[in-house]
Length: 155
Image 1 (tube, one colour):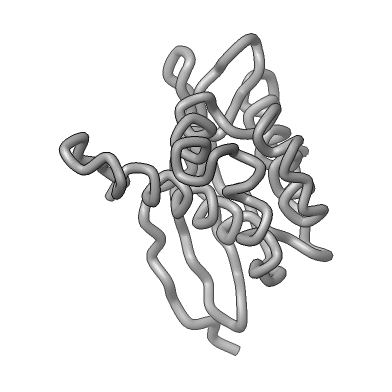
Image 2 (cartoon, helix red, strand yellow; image 1 turned 90 degrees about the vertical axis):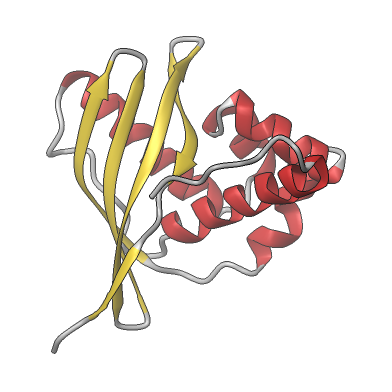
């Protein structure tokens, strides 16, 4: 299920934009278990590298890098509307993110769009979600996320 926004509620749109970035960051933060690009080739590897870079920038709490190089223009616009600037919208939210492990399971490409299926693990629970990306200015950027299905880790 993809996140849908109704244009008839501009204040909610701004808040939703901020929540989108936080959800993306929470899904991708890693400390010790970093996603790998080695299973991918060509353009898929470029998509995977964007996810790895995003994960690293979230872990380092690099709001400027997140806004300038990792997030798609549509996301940064929503964050700017929510808090006056993309960086301001991310600053406090990044402090609240705990570490989780991440695996990129698959990547599918359709022209200038991509979808990456991700598996993250936090507190013994696994979640599978989809991250969407768009190619802007010759670089892949994160544009959205799909709902995650959570399961308990069996041990």
